[in-house]
Amino acid sequence: MPSAPQSRSVELPSEVARACVFALELKAVDVVALDLRGLSSATDFFVIASGMSDVQVKAVADHVIDELKKEGVRPEHVEGRQAGRWVLIDYVDFVVHVFHQAAREFYQLEMLWGDAPQAEFEP
Image 1 (cartoon, rainbow, N blue to C red):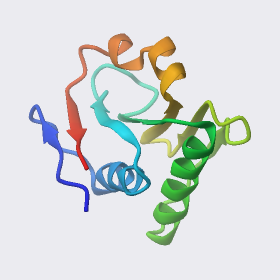
Image 2 (image 1 turned 60 degrees about the vertical axis):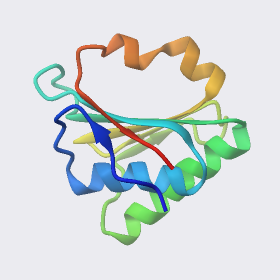
Image 3 (image 1 turned 30 degrees about the vertical axis):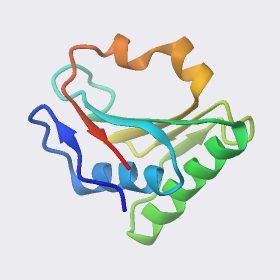
Image 4 (image 1 turned 180 degrees about the vertical axis):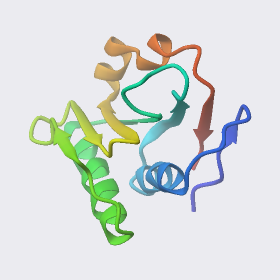
């Protein structure tokens, strides 16, 4: 069972924390939640997770979507599901990014939002 987040004073809404846990259930790596409140008007939180293959990226994204739906949380929009390199799941108040590891290294969202407090999740 995945552990609670190790964070720098980040209060996560339950659906954001659950998205992180669901990603870890399918062995996603480097799972973090960034608190963008006060830094972005587009959304409050980013969840970022990596898969080691396109198949794993799709599986993690599908698992997050399916499990949050069971809890009554449905995405507004999903992009990239077919390709499997980067799946973006937009829940309006938070966005889940599931990357293939190489794509995550290329886009470096954590560096772009380096000022954001973050919570890290470990298996």
